[in-house]
Length: 411
Length: 87
Image (cartoon, rainbow over all chains, first blue to last red; front, side, top):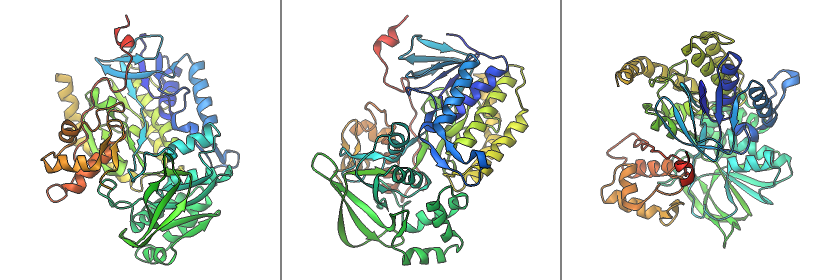
């Protein structure tokens, strides 16, 4: 198949980019591994108290269906259950699971999103242990209860939202605890560090639980730590948020039967005796990182920007990369919520249109401003210093991106 | 703790990875070549961040930054031979 633009990833950014280019005269194909379009939108369901009255409930599944329908109505070829296993040339995308062998296009947008980081506690491979993202998909997309008694390990905006969602469906979430400090997990999850991160994101809290945590942030460090010391746990919506306990082991014979907890100092050092809690399910949450493998094989230089969530493709403010005809959008460029990634997708679409000598529904500048606006009204924030990360990338782009692009053109 | 599985696809435990580091491995590919970590079905998508964390923890005296992400190679996902050969 030959199209003008090939997009890998049918999540919020990929679909909005497809809509933008298809509305302005380009042909497009979107490829996604999952059986239905929408990406992480499919699991999202929450209330946003700051949104306009008729827009308070964010129903990701509905947003996904609307975007996909709009794209298909515009003639976008939507491949689901299809895997892009190789990209080469400028551009040829090899497929498996599709009726066609490959898609060729002049421009390629990688909107491959992010993946969950593993949390290797002893016993984490026992059946009954699942990632927080899987718990979200089971709960909100498939309407399947992940267990009867659930413990969540890892306290962050995503795990807090999923806890609320599970609670709303009647699942008994017995608590939320922190991951331990081990060589494989690192020291990023101590009570002090966790509270610091939460207080940074809680200002825009979408749910009562985050807002409660946000109350801590009224008193900044070091008094924040003093608060954490006093409250070994907070009980919010009936779920104990045990910020001074870590999970050291998941136990069971062939399946999850319990979990061992230990008290820790605010810096994460273990104190006291281990405590056993009976649960049948453990959800692990260690954060997300950008999925860059196809960008690497496409020859795009990579940059490590911790504020964005890890290693990301070098890209400019218009979502172009140093590689001619290669664009990126969404969580591959840094971990953010769906409202931001939808705006990024449109921006990437407009940039691709410009490369074909066409104009889109907005100027590149206006679309860029929309991304910032979306960030300002976003109810969920995953990386506390995301703006700093974005600025860092702009600086690196000014220093290296233009130079790299010239190099690529010479090759 | 030392027998906790890190790479589920290839069944590699934490102590095998720390042994590889003791033998001189200082990067993700170095560990991979010694103990097959990240060489299975998922190609390291699950374990690579953990392996980088272990390297950072074990090598912290000599390097302050996380070892770089290894370069992905095609095929980046499992693919049916029939789809490779398809005309």
